Length: 566
Image (tube, rainbow, N blue to C red; front, side, top):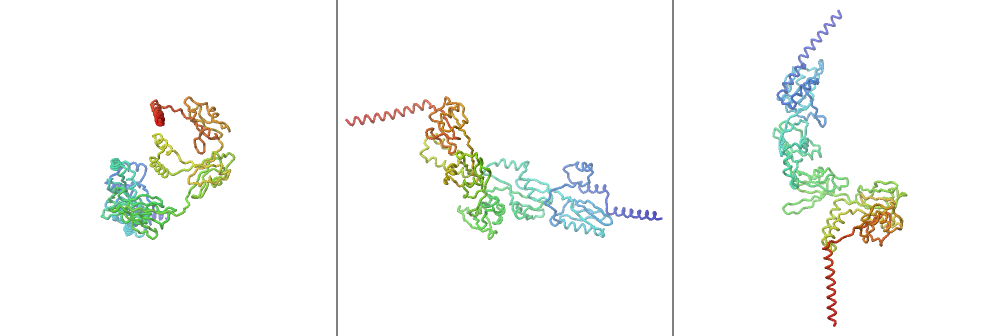
């Protein structure tokens, strides 16, 4: 009797369950049929995708993952056709039903009916659906969750014309990124190729963009301001029917310039309504050494060609209006201690980079920081190199070359060629006598160090380099007290083309050229034997003619003087 009662209760339970499922649930076949009704009229990129997914055992709705910035804000997200939701009913019967917003903008809920959610926020859509379901299943808990945002097409207008696939979580900046790097964009490539001229430099606008909504409203897009303020209004999400107008700009016709102590100085696109705070912001803010209360604005007047200097304080003048072609300069702090260093190499105890203070650290100080010399150091061969920045070197060289025409020493073309070669050669060696400085404590040799200086403490190489017109040029072991003939002999002697009379000794440290009778050879020095110079016949004829002319003039003068004295 007890078993019969249990069997009866189980039968009633299954009947109730089947009835509830008939009202609330749907079979997998029905869901698949509904899915085909909802999406069958929509074009697909991969026509066989559904068959492939079915073979893998997936459901009829393929959820495509797309990158999002974080959890979607229900008050911001706008619901539209093809959004994929899950309706959950939890109570006596628990059921989860996938729902797709139809092309008409509604969701069809079995046993409940049709609920319109098109064009409303996600929060409003949740409220409408839950309210409708609760009328039918008032004792159950109900949820309505967005599973996968839809995708749709928007139009882009400008030099690039076309449509792009986006979603409600796609910002304008994502499309701009595609436009900037898309090498398959035919119109863009053609435009750049046909206008490949230095003075015609155009680029996609990042600050004067318009997003036209289907309802007629227009949003001004400013990517720089978006990253400066994190305000979504400057970089909105897309909606169906949007038209994005992205103009191309010529920066030289519409710019402001920010320089000095800012993070990323340069010229930037101007937007009507820009103020001082915006200008500093798009230059990535102040440098650590900036003086925010010492900003100079240079404002040019096209009619007169003159400009005004306007002095601004950032905290006081944040809202100061900036105009097109304005130039801002943020002053640096006075006496700022820059991050500068020198490199000490060679025969010191601790070689490496060492910090120095601006215009205050001397050569001796750097050697002490490196632990001093080791036993192998040899002061006569030590060197200090100075690296000048490219801008300084170019300007300095240019000034000298401009003045070369006024120099009376540059007479022949050979003189000019030699001068030009010399001025273009490296000028980074600082002449310092390390022996005088460290052995005789001569403070005149204790030079001030500059940023990126290189101090090389050499060892005693005990060699002399012999090159030029010798039979075996190369390094010859140094032998104290030996003259130039000794080293030439060690290098195989003079070659047939040698001009022995013009042989020179080049000192290692100063790189000065000396006659062998004027100096003695030391370790590290160079011996150079030049090639004998043979003059062409016409040169010799001209030289003889000049000498003959001089002699004739002297002789004529002598005869005239002698005749006059009679």
